[in-house]
Image (spheres, rainbow, N blue to C red):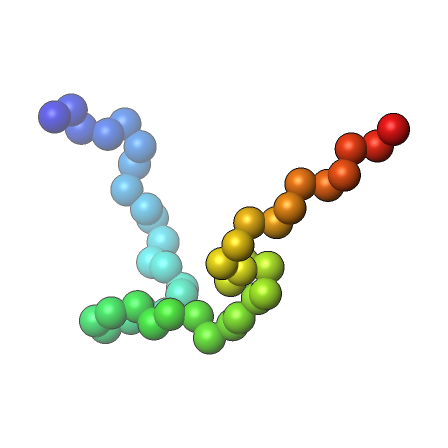
Length: 45
């Protein structure tokens, strides 16, 4: 495998470093959590 031509990061990430499993989000959205597809809009005349 060839080496990447992209250099390694020069800064340390400033986000949270999780130890172990990454937690799941605690936000619920009716749109993104829907179990049925959204019906197609009615065609315009």
